[in-house]
Image (cartoon, rainbow, N blue to C red; front, side, top):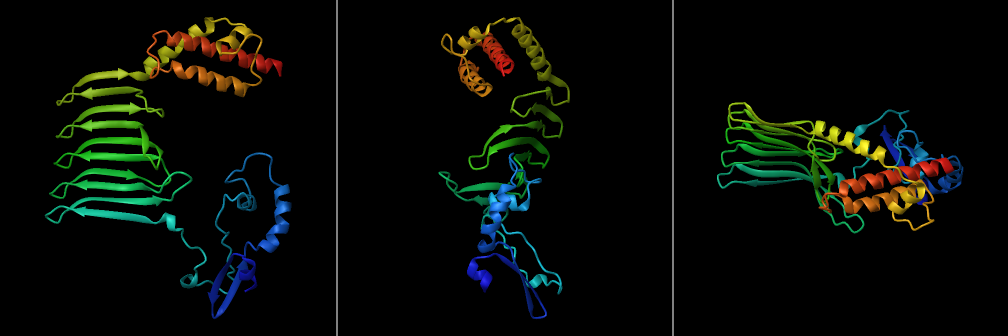
Length: 308
């Protein structure tokens, strides 16, 4: 009763009519100990595996109480209600059926609570579509705790038609990009195409397309092209000679003005580079301009490093 009056968290163990209570977070005692713990906090950032339990509790990283049980008189799992689940972890499944009674579609999802100005959303876990004969035609899996969504499409003969992998950037809006291997298959099972995507959602490595008889009809080594272009870019970059004042002017600084630190250089550099992106500028000389801007950034960073 005292623990309840003080608002403390506690766990109970029932055995042979006895209750063993272990108080965990009584504000009356926490107030005096918080100051001592805070004085010992590291100057660096918190780390989930290296920071102490108390530090993570004070910072409200842990929002559950530590589960401490007294086992001196044994333990009865049937009476243990000390560690309840959060409501937000509950999964929901919706099912729909064809007129003939066969399953048409089902999906399992988790409700994401509203957060700030973001409304409540459904976070997909699994989704399957079936034809009228009960054959699965589309199978999607989006495992909890990881950003990859796998999607498989099947022919009517149940052979794989295509397989894709997405990197989901936002679970609420389902904004995603292609990643890993993407493959297509003919009705007889022969591979039709295989494309590989890097972490940026751009084609990489060897990508191929095949004819129905298995012959290769198209192939391209994207990574080889990228490395050749990087070599050409770096070669041109090394030939651009700039003074510190010229470098500052290229990044938009007026005469006599210089950035105060590396963070400012990077911030201005990104701002200057934005209009040079191929999605925003059709200018064929944008690449040459980017070479100059990159060289200017390098020169200013070198100047600041020498200065300090």
